[in-house]
Image (cartoon, rainbow, N blue to C red; front, side, top):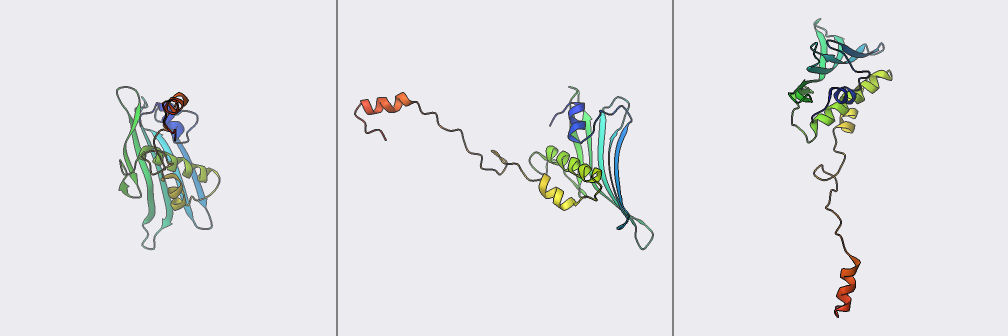
Length: 170
C-alpha cells in the first residue's frame, strides 16, 4: 500500500494534516475502572519522512508497584524515493503484524481509526470486537468472498445463427 502523506493521515483518522514533529493525541480515562486508553499519531522528523501511530492501554499499577501498561498496536510508515508512504513496521497484540493477513496495511489502519472513534466517543474500546470487525476481509476475489469470474458475453446473433443452421438452439 503506497499512499501520499495526506492519504496516510486520513486512513489514521488525522485531520488536518500534521507538520513536522507534530503529534495528534486522543485519550479517554475511565474513572470507575481506572483505565486510560490513549492513541496517537506522531510525525518523527521535520521533513515528515516518518510517521508512527500507537495505541496504549494503561491499567494503573500492579500489586508489586510496576506499571500495567500494554501497547496494543504500533506502526511505522516511511516515505520512499517516489514520495509515497509505506508501512514498514507494525506490531499488533505483541507480535509482528507485517504480511500476517491479506491487505494487512488497510486492516491495521481501519483498526486504529475504529479505536480512535471509540476514544473520541468517550469509551474504552472493546479491542476484541474492533479486531473482529476490522480484520475480516470484505469479500471479493481472493479475499475469502464469493469472487467468481466475469459473466460470459453471449451475443444474440450467435444464438439465432445456430438455430438458422438447423441447430436446436438450447
